[in-house]
Structure formats: structure tokens, C-alpha cells
Length: 383
Image 1 (cartoon, helix red, strand yellow):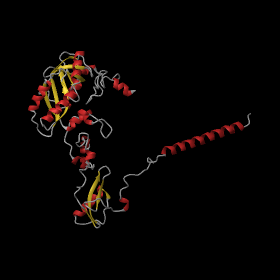
Image 2 (cartoon, helix red, strand yellow; image 1 turned 30 degrees about the horizontal axis):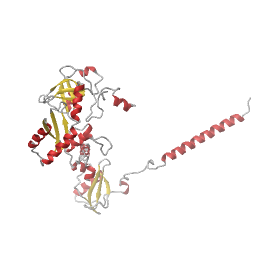
Image 3 (cartoon, rainbow, N blue to C red; image 1 turned 90 degrees about the vertical axis):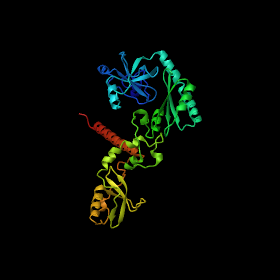
């Protein structure tokens, strides 16, 4: 029921207006929609177009707008049609969050709410986008250009077409623009996007089972390197690290600052521990348990021993004095416990059956006592 209310937008107009598109990319929640005074703090309106393209427009005419309204706005040239995503105070906060310099930003006007004729024309040109993309890919192939047309977006009035392309290097597409303009008889604009942005525009489900971050909220795409995985002791297998964009997953960067803070006080991985039993080399560190794992061979994982960080620092201090310790661990009881212990029986497939049998036995015993008490009362002589 709750999901139905959210989808219909009848509970909170800020979540999704009744006319709003709940499946749009980069959705926003207008959590101040129930406070009318906040809507009058700014005459700027955030409007979203196809996929992730958004713009901020000036509502000079004082049109009363809500999230989900379709509006006609100024474009270069002509006009465009988009969906209102934010109004009022939250627009100013969104501009600040996205680090947009409004002194350099060209603020265009919002004309009106979209009419039926505007929407008909909008859907007419939108239906041409796929065929236009296929035709554009054929043209780039004929011109032997090392680029890929990833998406096409028509302006609502058909005066301009935006081609989103992916390329490894710089592409000279001057000839391409002439051919595209002659073919589609409209103004052409080329925008280069990265592989991560393309994945966000297409959308999909990640290996975690949730919708891709780049398709919902993630807009700041930064470089993700394998060093981020090494800091967290994540396998550097490309098949496991790569996302749907064939790049390293953006989420690998999320917890890197936490790990960097955690390993500041840990000894260097390059230090070799010298003991009377031989030299031991660092293999892996369990940051959360405060345990470092060492091996007797620098090139293979043999004779692995888990050592607490405090003991490692103690051995390093002794080695600096030119001495060797008898062994890595002081006593047998100092050895860390196993990584996993089944202490609550969570691996048992019949754990619920046992509980049910106990409950049934307790219930039967209670019923037997009750019946015995009733029987004793019935056998007592009545005065």
C-alpha cells in the first residue's frame, strides 16, 4: 500500500507529483513541498529533460508550478519541453550543491505550462530518436571516425538535435556535422560523454541488486584505480571489479577514506619480521579485527599466521634493536580465534524445527498440568 501511495504521489506531492514520472533518472525529493512559504523564496525552477540533462530557468510570469508539471522553456534556438523537478528554496540549495556559478550561468526563461500541441510535437520528435541514432552510427562508420554515438536527443520543437558520443581521444567531426545537418535538416550539437555517463543514461541493475548509482544519484564521476581496491584488500580480478560500463565500479571508491584513516597507525607492509624460526612477509591485513597475516615465503601463501597489530609493532621494535624473537606469537592462547564460528546455529537447516518442537513440548506440558489441575478440582468433595 505504501509503495502504491508513493507511486501515485497522493501522500506527499514532493515525492512524485500525480503527473510526475517516478522512473526518471536522477530523481529528487521536494521535501519542502508542503510548506507554501518556501516556494516563494526563489523564482528559479529546475527542469529535467531526457535522461540526466537538467537546467535552471527563470519563472518571471509567476506561474504556479509543482513537481511533475511539464513546461515549455527557452532554448537556443526555439523552445524545449521538460519536467519540473524542483521549485522554491530547494532550487537554490541544489545549485549550491552542484557548484554552479550563477554569474556565468546563462539563465533562460520559462514560458508556460506545456500545451497539448507542445506535448504532441514533443512525442513526435522523441519517436525519431532511435532511428536517428542508428542512421548517425552508419554515417560515422562510413567516415571512418573512431567514435560511437551513444544517444540522441531531439529538442521539443525539432530545431536542434544533440548527439552524445563516446571517444577515446580527440575526434575531428567537422565533416560529420555537415553530413548530419544535410541528412536531418536541423541544427546539430555534439556532446562527448564518458563510459560511466553512458551507463547512467542507459540504466540497469548492479551486482548488488539495486539500480545503478550513476542512473539514480551519482553525478560526480571521478577516476577509480586499482589502488583503491588494494587499500581495502579487494581482489583485483577485472571481472569482479568491472561494472556495466567496463570500468572499475564507482562504489570501490566509497569506503577508501575510511580505510586510509584506519591504516594510518598500522606498520608498513614492506617490513619483514625476523624471528629465530625464519623471516616472515606480510600478506594481508584485516583492518576491522586489527590482525595482520604473514607468510614464511614472500611469493606464496604458505605457513600463514595471523598476528595482532600490537604484537607486530613489538616485534618490529625488537628487530630494530638487532634482536630476533623466538616466534611470532608469545603463547598459544595469543593466537587469534577463527575467522568464523557458528555460535548460534545459524547454519542448521532444522533450527526452526527444533524451536517448534520445544514450543510444542512446552505447550503440551502446560496443557497436561492444566488438565490435571481440573481433574483434581473435580474429585474434591463439595461442601
